[in-house]
Amino acid sequence: MGITQGYILLAIAALLVIAIFAFYIGRDRKSRRITPLAGLAFALVVAGLIFGQDRVIGYSLLGAGVVLALADVLIRWRR
Image 1: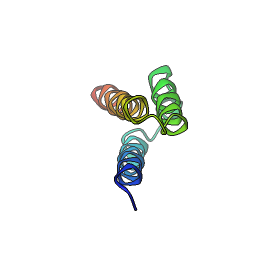
Image 2 (image 1 turned 120 degrees about the horizontal axis):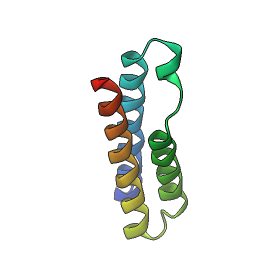
Image 3 (image 1 turned 135 degrees about the vertical axis):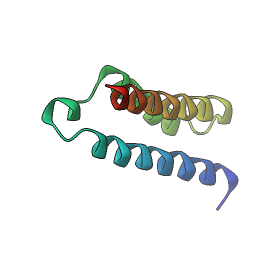
């Protein structure tokens, strides 16, 4: 496995941990709805995977998606 695949797996694992954490934070139906920030984070991660051939763009999009997903979890947690 190359370093590129390692970074992609690390980003996916981080998103999985964030998703599990977000699932357990909100138990009611209203908090389980996807927020615009979470939708944008998902779109950035998918775009990062699509544009993974160009490392700078791919990693930047993946990183931005993970950061936005984490920000969404923290915003939901504080409510």
